Length: 459
Image (cartoon, rainbow, N blue to C red; front, side):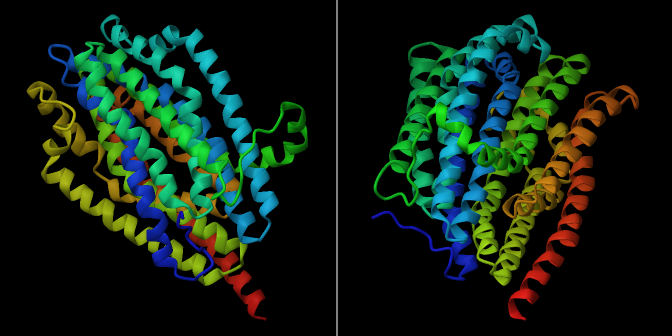
């Protein structure tokens, strides 16, 4: 029997760990889909550094796919949690099935458009003739798994929102283990290089998607999945609008990450060449690894916040917010110290090239200088999404990346003559300003509402 976490038991800390730890394992393992590719690719004899730069040019497209996945998956899951907290199981089921329909439809459109325009897209992202030779074949094969990737990642929050966090973890573990086994086989044994890495990834994503769909259609799931016929979708338009409205914040967060990656690659190719694109690929990969525990904690706390908000249990909502923020801040502070004293430990995961290693160390120090402050942005953003505060969530997603990081990425190198250093400094500046403003706004808007809700309940 699959264990279901009871969000109604008032044990907030144990519930957070019960959902966040399996999610942490799942998300760490999920990194293996792409991280393991980069680890192996960076060690291809004689080609590793150039191949790593080529794969880095595919990041914006991968982030764009993730953005659309979050639009429907993370847009629907908090609403599903609130509906369950209200005791409205039919509404929760409708939200999940509507999200499923939109994930399938969007994945097919993205696949067709990106396959048709893959080469001009990569040129726009700063691909040279050398890096194009690696980026194009990788991207075209990777895109074949778009539907599987979006379903595996997009439906997993609905498994967690029902309390089945261990199943959500297993969904990812199955695919990641397959990826670990297939990557060295295809890359080295079959001599497929970057093509082998992409093929291993899409086969692994397919296994994860099949497992998630099988569970959601099985007897143990509280909410059961079905594909809404196209002719019936018009009856779900309001639900679709609500999902998209809430998911816009998560969409913008990932889409702007894609935009930032494009801007960074473009400026770095101008001031530093392919070497610095490879450095940014490494730093982005390290960032993904280090961000994972924070997102696991916030994503694991989100259904607890949403459920208790729907059930009008205000003390539980406040306690969850405090626990989530304090643990996240402590973690990021420790990581910042480790990067300060042992940067090569992180860089060596992806390369053994001494030239690349030495050039990457100062860039790492600059990029992660204010790492702890991003806790304020992520925690505040998570609270806004969990409580269906769409306008605030969207604004702060846009503010940090579009209003701050992208302009600074161009302004600091060109206007202030900082060259490649300007690219790596843009992120820490935005962490401080964006994080402080987001968290302060959350405290000034959410806490008074919760206090009023608590007062009305006791009066």
